[in-house]
Image (tube, rainbow, N blue to C red; front, top):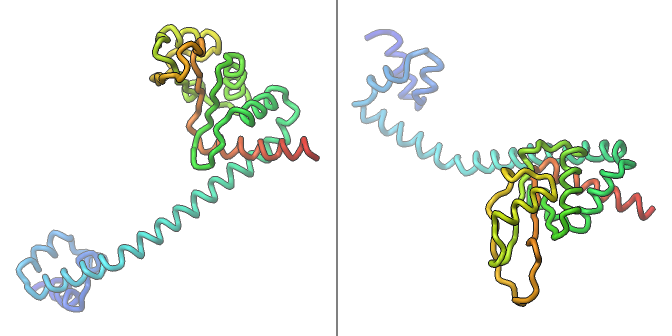
Length: 220
């Protein structure tokens, strides 16, 4: 019997896994499998190692989850720190302040949502916020999306063309509209409600920091 095979058998009897033996002796896993496949004692070792690995998996999983949470917490804190630095540079820019005020009044502020979203019936507000997204926080145009909330008597294509012309957002950036039934048939929003949004945890963290700093600046 070749010497490395003897050593491999001894290591296996000590309870070593195929991967551990390969690391120690440099023997391919396929070769080890061929040597031990008919050995009942080796199968018992295999089963025991499998059980040990399974019992330790929840602990490993919890450790991975904890490490990922810490990593993302550090990334989000980095976004907030960058937001504070940028606020000092942008706080006297009229378009920056307009965008902050609009989001303060009409924006989605839930920390659970990793997106910036603003909804309004006034095309001018949507246009200003679109410009704020493009020119102030430098969101790529193709990342800025729009969807409409419409009553059943409003034609989808017509409303999209109207909002596209009024806001400057290309129709290609409009997603599927949502239709609702109003409680008052005679009270209609002529063009529906326009929702403009960007999916980005980075920008969401920053704008929430800007809102906080701007409020403090106004109240101090």
